[in-house]
Image 1 (cartoon, rainbow, N blue to C red):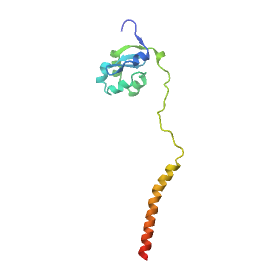
Image 2 (cartoon, rainbow, N blue to C red):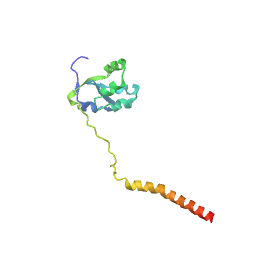
Image 3 (cartoon, rainbow, N blue to C red):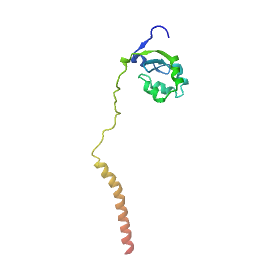
Image 4 (spheres, rainbow, N blue to C red):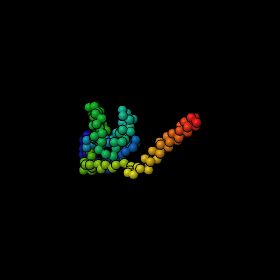
Length: 134
């Protein structure tokens, strides 16, 4: 590839995140994989989910073959400005309902749901026993 290389920010590459325009950032390079979406063995969802971030780990974790890595050359569009890639992604835990430490009312209800039928059964057996013997 002759001439000066185009350098993109992560934000610029992240704008290309749909099936009609899909760019990936892998190993500091930007690839336009739009034409490859239909042919990708893992499906287009895998590629689309890797947009908007540094997808190097995603790419390496799959264990692509050397021929798959060589295919990247035909999709190369430029380099990424590595200063625009966050060094640490902040983890945001999912929202969960608040934990109720006082489970006593629930426990009493469950206990009563178990004991009340037993008491009724015991009373019925007792009444039957005493009325039969008399």
